[in-house]
Image (cartoon, rainbow, N blue to C red; front, side):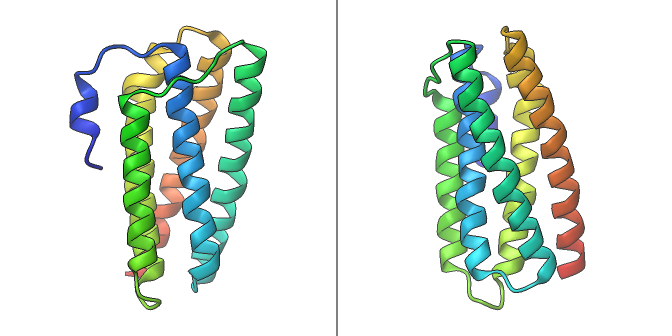
Length: 160
């Protein structure tokens, strides 16, 4: 997505900022999945959206629990703002997509979003996390993001 080039040279993030990025990514996925559940037609796309809603809602809840347990107050930052803007663009694309193109638009957006978050986790968020519980949360999130990416790519292949 658009913001990755600018994120590469950014200053290291605090744990509070890392947590805000993770929360922002999860909440964007929830919002997009809710739209897909209203509009998707292909059974695989509907199932994927259900999984996104469930997994990312759970991840957002876990982030809140982590914040409370570790006394971390998520702090907005340029990377979380970039993810929010990217998610807003995806939502606009989903809302503008015709019924016949919706499934492919949603799934292509999911591939791009999961690639972006996977790169952020690997290159920035996990290495910069200082809190052990936060790092564990991010490693688990990374595993799920990789699985979601594989599923999304497979569904795109089946739709094309």
